Structure formats: structure tokens, C-alpha cells
Image (tube, rainbow over all chains, first blue to last red; front, side):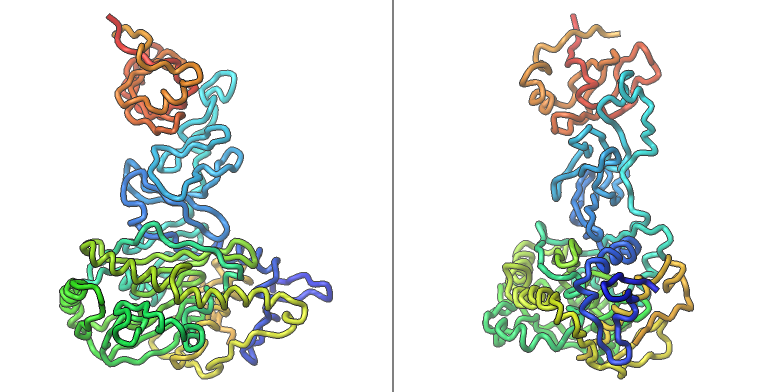
Length: 466
Length: 83
């Protein structure tokens, strides 16, 4: 039972969640001690999304990404061409060894005392390393390499890592969500790992707690009507002013059932779309720019062939987005992740996927749509950001903290179905079941002493709290 | 064993030494502080680091052919083959 010190009696974290009524305390979003524990209990243990392999395509290419509040150097080795991830902090005095966001380097040299690391993270030099009046050749290079993540996974081009050696394998961590992630990393013709991402990608900081967007923007169908009412009038969609300015791509999917599903054991969840038959629906023209539909139609026909006898995975194209616990939200064309900085500051990164082999006019059309739709210069997420920004200050006050948030949409109506592992709860498609699943997993992580106490290492665990 | 003389082209001393070091082309030979001769395989172009191959080393002949990273303070001077 993890306790939080307060001025009038300590409280357990569990007591902040009212599992009888579907509400939870705002303290979870504004209390700095809770935030610090999240860094230790969640971000130091979970598999976290780092980026995409196309961001470091060549030997020596690097980029700075983040795991929790810490910078991580993602680099493709010059010799074996493998991608690795290291803490961006010199082993000598802790200075950043890389102070550029992205580039190509022979070595990473600390500007303080010139401790120098190669692209595999090995210590290969330092000022005075062989000087008889200094280190005299006695510095053990093998021992003092950069701190490397405990586990790393390139999953169909998407890059993930964890600091915890005891964490389960990445596929076990994803559970039934592994197939949708793979599916969403496919090119539009169905080629595995067939995407690249646009660079530079979007980054911006939002003055709010990381859980505000990361836990509740997937899937949150009831926010759209009000928050995004103005967007269609701006005609930001692929068809621009045609089709009534609809902001989404046109499509006509096969018969399907849509649920909000939350995996209370794994923490993942969002839109869960069950198709009723194999294959893909016919292509529907969706693009204003000439020639773009011709490309996608041809690609789609190849993908139809691939899936003609298979029911496609439950999330991704034509369905809406899913969250991979704790801070990654994915759909067919946007990969978005949330890096906490402080209890009230989060940094959002958005990657947009596009077929590697697409011709430039197609890439341009996708890129322009992404810019119109997403990010600080787009329209849709500017709407979202306004909400995220004001949630935090309006929840900080003494009075505000006395009143719980309501997470009760669909409360008590979710069902577990036979044949699904863990604790996946299916609910109707406009509920907050996926949000509640995130908090089941959140509490499990915050209370767990190690991965031994957590699903799926503990296969009998039941983390569902509501 | 070749004889090596200081390079007339690349002067690594003085206020311009760092910039000259930064732009040393691959293939340039250097005399290290310990006396060995190395050839630049790759220059990090940061004014500080090089990747080199040992060409001559009287003190440790078995190191010839080895490749290593070096820091600019380990380099004594640029050299070229003498007459």
C-alpha cells in the first residue's frame, strides 16, 4: 500500500480512487510526490516507445528521444548497424554527451572532460586516458560505457525499450495488442514495416499533467462534438472543402462492431473494431490532390489480396486509435507519445507515417494533411490543447482538489468475454472503459514492488479495480 | 621503416590549430605523443576526435594495423614521408 504524506493524515494511493462510484481524486494529477513515484514505478519499468527506425537510417545516425523525464540517445551503430539506446549522460560527471536533436556522428564526446563513446556506447577515449600523469591507461573502458537500456525491441520499424531487466518480453507486454501495432506499421499495400516517418517531427510542451492527454485522449468519443465542432468548417480534411469539409479520410468499411475495450491487466485499450468477414472493403477516393487516389487505390488492391482470407486485426485503419500503456497512442497514420517533464508539464511528440515507396506528390499530400490536422500549427489538436491546458490549473486549487473527476461513463456495463486473455473489458463504443483500464494498470504499477507482482509476469494477477 | 618529417601543410599549433585539426582529411599521417605513426581513417570534424589506423609503432610493433579512436591531445603533429 503506497502512502502519500499529507498535512492531515497520510493516505494510500488506492484510497484516491473511488471504485464504487467510478471517480478519482484530482490529487493523482497535481500532487508532486505522486508524479515522482510515477517516474520510478512506471517510467523506469515500462516498455516505452522511442521512435521509428527511419529516423536513424544510416550508420552513425542518432536522435535524442526520451524515457520519462530523461533524455535517451538513439543511435545506429557504425559497425553492426544495429540501433541501440543509451542514457544521454556521461559516466564521468553526468554531462550530456549529445546536445543535438538529430544528426550523424563518429563519436559522442562529452564537452566536459572529453570522455568519448562510440556508436555502440563503448568508452573509447578520454582526455589523459593514456597519460602517465593522469589515468595512465588504468581507466576500465569496458566498465564505463554509456548506460544502455535493459531491453530494446525493433518491432516492425517501431522502436521500444525498458530500463527494467525483469520486464516481460515486448510481445508479452503488448499481449493481444501486438497484432494491431504490427498492422499499423504496415505500408498501405500491406508490406510489413513499410513506413517511414516525416522529419523533422512535431514536438511541443503543454502545461498539464501527462495523464490528462495520455490516459484520456484514446478513446474519448464524447469530446469531439464540442471540442472539434469548428474543425470541419476549416476544411482541414484530405478532401478539403469537398465532402462538407469532413476532417477524416473517406472510407466505407466492412460490417463491423465497435467497442471501447480496456485491458485492465495490461493498461492498453481504446477502439476495438471487430470485422465480421475477411478482407478489406473497396477503396474509396479520399484525396483532393490529383493522382494521390490512383496511388492509394493500387496499393489498396495489393493489400486486399494479402487479407482476402483473413480478418484484419481489431484496431488501426478505419477504427480509431488505441493506447499502449502508459504514454503511447497509435492509429493508422499518427503515432503520438507523451513525455512527462514535471507534474504539470508534458511534452508531446507526433510522428506521421507514410509509405517509404510513395512518390513525392503522395508524401506531400499526407504531410500537408498532417500539418493541417495535427500539432501546434494544425487545427484539431489546437482545440484539444486548449482543454488540456486548462484542466491542470483548474484542478490545482484547494477547493478543486476536494472534488473527484468523473470516470463513470459506462461504469458497470463492461463485460469480459471468453477467449480473451487477461482482463479485457468490452464496453459500448462511447464509454470511458479504456480510461478506467489505464487506472487499474496505474495502481498496479504504483503498488508493485517489482515485475514479479505484475501481469503478465504474474500470470494469475488480476489488476482490475473497477 | 619510413622516415617522417613534420607536415608543411598542416600546423596543429597556435590559435588556428583546432580548426586545422577539425579539417584534417582522411589519409593524413600523424605522429602520436607516444611516437607511433597513425593514418586518419575518419575525422569526427569536431576538432577533437579521430578514428585512425596504426601505421608504425617501434615501441609496440604488434599494434600496427590496429584501429582506434584518438583525442587531439594524444596527437603530437601531422607528418609526411621524408626524402
